[in-house]
Length: 67
Figure 1 (tube, rainbow, N blue to C red):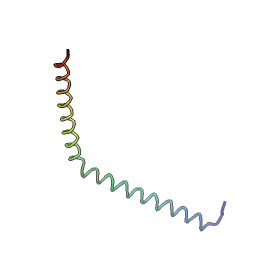
Figure 2 (cartoon, rainbow, N blue to C red):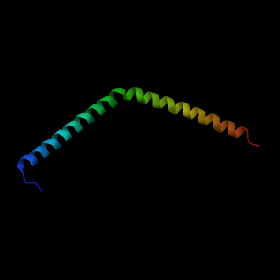
Figure 3 (cartoon, helix red, strand yellow):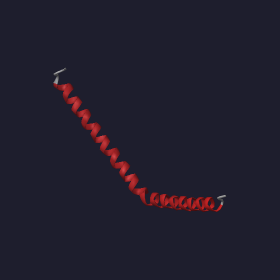
Figure 4 (cartoon, rainbow, N blue to C red):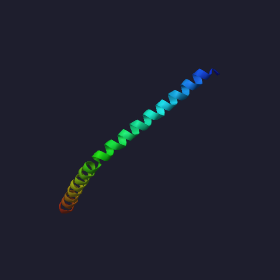
């Protein structure tokens, strides 16, 4: 193992910058999700309602067409 203090400090600085960039990326991702969340909830809700209607139609048609 290298005991050179310079390489140890360089590694620590590298870790700190890596953590800083990770935190910045996470902050940007959360901000983006917060900005599109209301629209996303509406879209998911509409898709769920459409799926429910299609499911009900399929079940009703299946029950009617039994032999």
